[in-house]
Amino acid sequence: HTLKDPASSLDNYVFEGWYSDSSFTNKVTEIKGSDLKDITVYAKFVQQVKFTFTNNSRGGYTLTSCEGFGVIEIPSTYNGKNVTEIAPGAFSGQTEITEIKIPATVSKIDVTAFNDCTSLEKFDVASQNTTYASLNGIIYNPAYTVIFKYPMGKKDKVYHAPKTLDVVQSNAFYGCLYLEQVNLPNDSTGIDGVGKIGISAFENCTALKNIELGYLANYFEDRCFMGCTSLQ
Image (cartoon, rainbow, N blue to C red; front, side):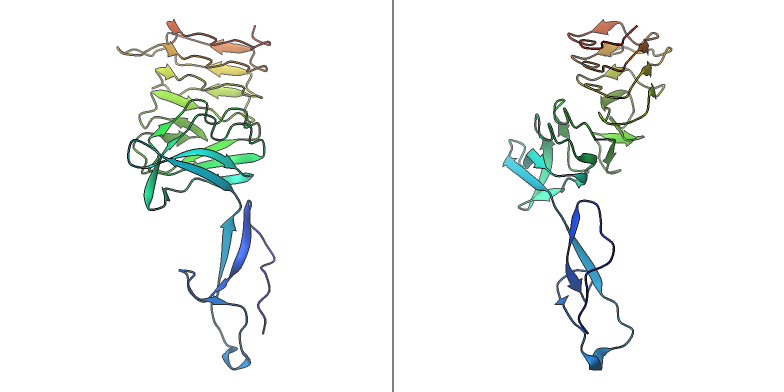
């Protein structure tokens, strides 16, 4: 009996073959007549994505570019070393990516890493990551005091910041296509960095009409609202 390809598929993955074990070491293509009985076979799918990595000064690898579509899962290791950084423009212009999964090993993400990913709706950061965390598809630090990146293609029209938020990182909302209203905390108090809105934080958010700043905003860096043509 020849095994056929599975009827269903996974986004951004292609079927690689059937295996007799869950570790995918023993590939099978057919089951002989004498073996016809209740057996379990495992389907292996391979992600269709092209990553480029370079060595970095921290003893790991930096993801420098990615080409793909749909859901992208960044590997935690490459050539036996941890993937620890995501470089400037690594995903820039990848207009068919809808979700990016970030492993626990990544501890540095450049602010321009995800620019112009127009279909990107969600980030999913591994719960074991000690530098970054995700909430509602958005990248923060684990204490939710800093927002690092809001996905450009997220279709929500309103963003309500966590009450803990103190800092809007550079490029955090850069080019968001659908966002019309941003509500920042109106009772933030603290010492260092409170009130900082970074360079190009809301640049080219052309649908953005209103920002409720509250007491958070007392320090604005360059180009915060450049290109926000709908801002009232």
